[in-house]
Image (cartoon, rainbow, N blue to C red; front, top):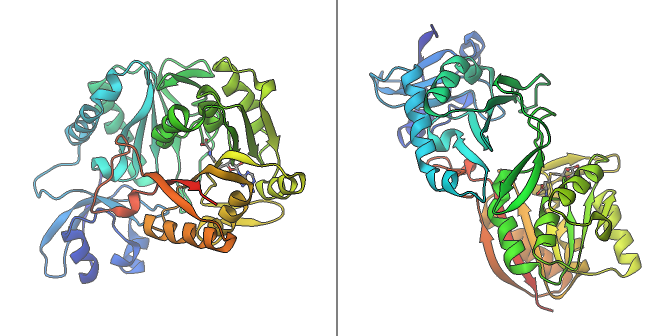
Length: 399
Ligand code: SAH
């Protein structure tokens, strides 16, 4: 039985919680109280006057120390609770589930679906649960029972991203059912991706870019020379090549990106030898390309929020403007830049200010073509705007 205890929230934070904010912030309590709590403890949250605010769990995460689970006094946090939350979330994805061209998507998105700290992704009849704290992981049994009571799982895998930094805990990620044979070939809008559910923190494809990949393939790639930076397994390059790109160039620092990108091209019957795959620091590639006078019709920028390489650290918040300047210099007139960031530390508005600044520094004009945030299956809640982290802007270089 999970322990339950009363927790009095400081006034300022109580006001936020009353307005629907789902995250229990660290500063809502005194440190000694936090230190006394055990991961997974259920907290009966009260304001300083003793009024009931909700029930949540304690779990240390990169953000906050837990999440509100219910605002109903009488609601128990038990298997039926998880079952109803999961069922409601899965029902909302019915259209994706029915689409035979897409067999990979998010089924449950943390606080957007009512349980912060837990996501569930669907990979062609396999279910991948990601647990963001030991606290939420202590409800594992109830959640897996709830999951299996709603759907027939071929197999279940999990990722543990505990600790303050959300770091991945190395483990055998297989939970139950059948073990998959990897790579598992999944489909997204008719494209194929080779994924691995038991090989480190990432699977080979980032599911939140589905709409952007489709848009690039269907509208922006035909006949184009494409540069895909921070390319990882080359998912954007695959989309561009399938959309008729003349040639794609994928640039990533990680050595594994070469075989991974070859694999993604190959499972889509694209001749990888006709594409360029370059293992190098993006900034080094930019100087090389400038020296050689290389230019592109379409440049994709999708850096991590933060990365440390041998030569430098990259922080999206500090360095995106500079990154864009480099990209602008390599983009042909009337060419397109797809600028993407998953950094939750700044808003779309701020992102636009980086973009304006970069073009202005380069003395180049541009047109905003379209922009994207998270797709529908990555449900967010207005009460927690930080959860809506993805920002993707399509920019046409005019001069
Ligand atoms: N755009 C990718 C996801 C990017 S993940 C996709 O859509 O699938 C971030 C990638 O950036 C990682 O593969 C990492 O190896 C790479 N990376 C980080 N710093 C880099 C740098 N300085 N130069 C090149 N690649 C870098």
